Image (cartoon, rainbow, N blue to C red; front, top):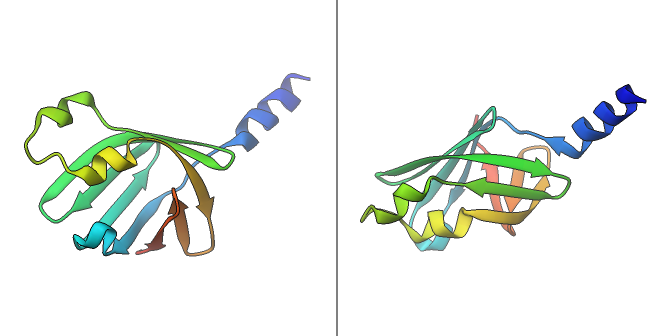
Length: 105
């Protein structure tokens, strides 16, 4: 019974790895999302922010540290990505909240 509970828990939570990119988010140029373990790094131009993510079924929750909000370079992109979103994973892409990111590596 314990084994069944562990299997169900692992099946409902998943992770991704690697770098995904979107060329033109908000018309502001290329955005890269790099996933490693439970960490996410988002790069857009000269801006880079690290946070954490968790996938549960068809939802992804991304959290960035609150201290970033006081930084003048804090972008609307990070505010948009922060929180829970619909999630889809395909062969060479992911979709977060309807925005498609293509596997870069």
